[in-house]
Length: 233
Image 1 (tube, rainbow, N blue to C red):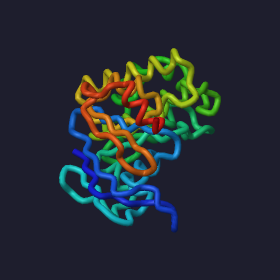
Image 2 (tube, one colour):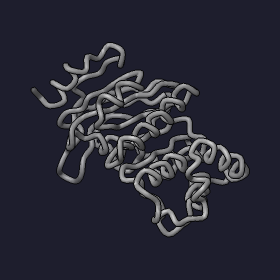
Image 3 (tube, one colour):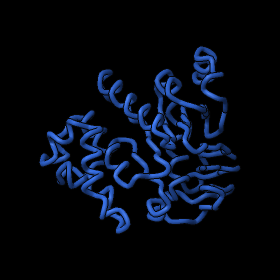
């Protein structure tokens, strides 16, 4: 579904990504892991059109995306759940969810998708009239994920969902990601928790210093060897 070929990108004179090539297959969960500073979030920004490419190509279903503005990604069926939640703090939970279906094509389905979101995340139903800024970190992450699903994206990109959350909340979030994958959703997951990411992934990419250091089906990855590469041991 999504294919990157020889991508280079960065910030001004500082290059971060060095000839990155990877593929996210339809109906699978592709995990991108790596330590801080490996270029994972920069890679997602390049995919979403938030950073210009200095070289290479990003293609969705064979159609080049290079130069496409970020706002077009929603029209193309791509949604991103950013690192750090980034909910609209002064808006209610329900208003945040509705923003996820802002495009005219999605507005007729808002009511049905709200019910689907509340069925998947029951705590959001309880807090639907509450300001998003008053949510706990775990609840805000659930809201960010639910908001990303409101447009029924063909490709869902999730950046560091477990960051700073309690283990019980992490378990709940990963159970939801596993159920989305089982339902046929195409997902790119960026995650530092290698064990949890490996457990639900179909394919794993390890990034180091802006490059792909490992690309392998998840079932073939040895966790100890992965950690050796992760920590450059």
